Image (cartoon, rainbow, N blue to C red; front, top):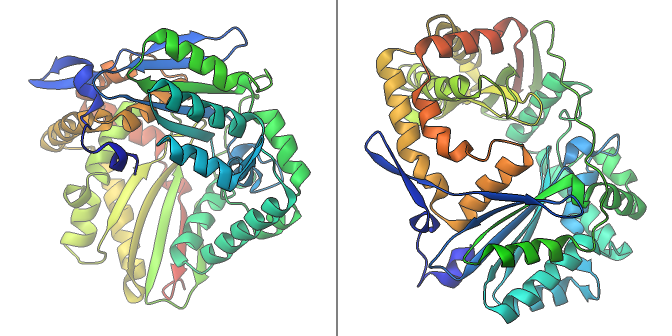
Length: 442
């Protein structure tokens, strides 16, 4: 991890930020500065002090939801950015970064792709790190032999997914929920589609999606704003200006419940069940978030864990969660149980959700959930890296700049009736899609 390089001087970034007293607890509240460059690049900056580091995260609307019919394109493009760029091959890139103690990373999910950079703020070291990052962003080589190697690695990963019943169930669950929607396929892609990908596909996808106006830059570190402005300009300098891609379509909820079974030679069965739930900027985000903390998101003390594990011993772990996404993401119930208990465990889990929808949380449960969420909030901001990820999320998803400031108060404002109303509106068990993979999938 990044912290190994700086363990002797590391201290939480939030110590340098303003603090908000809320309910007797001091919470870190960063001052997020925002501006738009002359070419339309959106930049989000938080200055910190005491740690000679800068963390940068560039996020682009270049996730697998933009694959079209070429499933796996976004993932493979992201994975090859640092396989060779500008005048350097992968080894040269790694050596230049190592020489200045910098770390660079890439990745892609359904909604986005990202490039991260962590560097010391010493001028010479930072200059080298930024130079490498700029080349990786704007001038990846996508050389033929590197492309074949990375594509083969992806195909191996896809094959390994097919040998893991949990992965099989998760992929089937998203496909059942989303059908023809861009969220339906896994970010890694599907075997037949990845086999058909070409180097030209990657070049074209990079040209269309890694553009100034199709992403954001988040910067957190010990430096003045003027330096952050210069850094953002430098990183974006060689990217085409482009345009933001059009919004994704909203998924169409399934009209009827369905159960899909896949036999697998395993002693346990993986169970996934759910419906489409909420988007990242959903007006019911906080009632659903707080309510699910009671229902299935708080570990051993959640309702689902109490009913499925503690009372009946059906599973070691059982949960529910929402995955808020750019458009409506899934609400998922999950557990893994012995084959001969599959049906009974599933019934108990669904009944627990249904009872919660009908009655909502108790006053005691709601208060405990709020205290737990607010009490743990500061841990989301206790390092530069975590803070950078939060700031990047705020920028990419167009959340208000005061989102972190108001988060505790909005959690505390949730009422029992808010939770009941939101769950009744969003979690329709009459449309439940259920996936069973394992020896009990009969």
